[in-house]
Image (tube, rainbow, N blue to C red; front, side):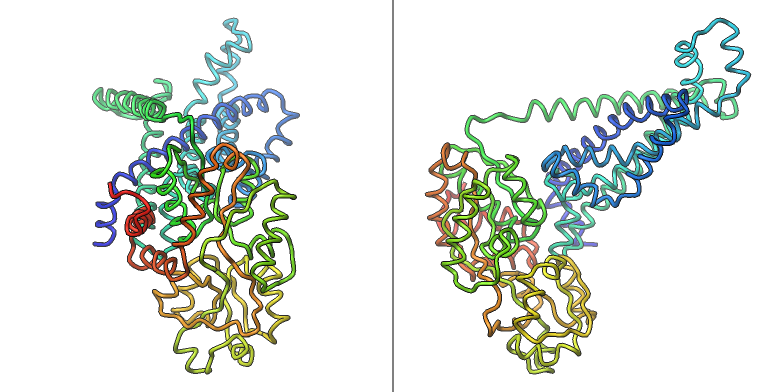
Length: 522
């Protein structure tokens, strides 16, 4: 609990900014869902033939896993806020459409006949009688969608859209419970607050004749209106503030990153280093996901620069067979990234973040494990918990089984830092890891030597589009100089500071650059 309170105190500004982002994204998605869902509900109420296909489509969308739907959005809308808003909007449609239909169909037929009897046409009947009477039911659907949207919007962090999900995901990645709570608790409070606000709106739109059974004094009614007014002013103010505080720069680039500690720290290092030594403004798109997502982002123009790894591109992107020749792998990656994707691979940084296999020291002593060949001899007694990526790629587990006679007792894929927790809890015996992982140092694990040199070299390489090369040539020169300072020992230490010492990646990056005299100490 103390860690949680300390984290809140130290990161209040960031949490508030992410909370505002979360609210804005959620409100936009819900407003769009209302604009689409209510008219659709009215349409299928009047035109019965359209009800089945429209409801079928909304039900299908609801059945698609949220992460899968988000993945489908990326090729269409790129990364950032657009796919997140579209995904949440689509998920929000079903309750709104259903409740609109239920509200309109639930009106007493005698009331409809009476309205027609006084000469109201269909349009007048709709907006003067049906919609006001159905409004409480419609608002219930909107309320359900709004509360659900708060939770769904946490997924926006996976594609660089911001929001409270960033804290949750970053906390899971670094096994930082305080950070997870710093994102989860405000999200829960926000969901409860939105539920209350929409309950007030539900009362406000309920016709007086339907409120007769509810005994409420004048003060309560006035308070309802005050809440609505404050809500509108607050939302409008947040959007206006965002517009006026955002600045446009003539010279700016966007740097993306994958979804693990090292990538986020490198992103901040590049940002501070470039901004301090040039007049370029650097924007960030953090934790975008796997290498393939970041690659799509730079090809789509959403980002201009990111750091990848030679082995990832050589084996996963280009589909080449395992190769331990560092120069040959780099040259192939540089040549084919330009010819196939029109992207520029710059000079490698001085560290190789290759794959490795790790076990607890107790396990290593029990089975006398020093190399992967040693592991192969007893693999049928051990449980392996690799990442999903490691299981699928031929330059990982598929090829590893061919290079070494490995036959694990059980393979239980676990993504991210939870696999470290599983290892330490005794639920697995072996995990895959990156050689510069700070969690290796944190948990004092034994790294098994790749004695047959199966794993590809994973030298870190900056990848840029032509815009950076042509408009900002100074960036390449700066990164050439920076790369000499980023060796394996340095990266392990930087990752350890974030993963174990719970320092902010931004602070770790700035301290490193100041220590090396690469930026001024402001």
